[in-house]
Length: 113
Image (cartoon, rainbow, N blue to C red; front, side, top):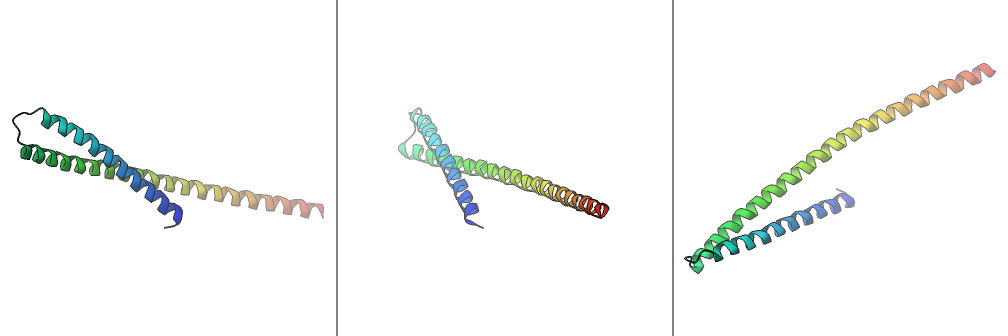
């Protein structure tokens, strides 16, 4: 893996981390609001609910991030395949044009002799 690929992977890792942290921050607010509205809960019960909810949300954030990453990788792979086909087609066309030009120049030079 070259430096640009490592940098791109690092950027993706940072984006994944920031997405997960933003998701968890919002989850903390939601669960705190929920438990604050339930007057019969003890502090221990609130803590248990908050811990369970945050673990679930961390799992969801990982699943969503993994899904997004897999989708991006699939799109990148399809792009590489399409680009490879385009590149081979372009190379083939360039070779055919070069051969045709060489033949034309040969015919002109032989005809001029």
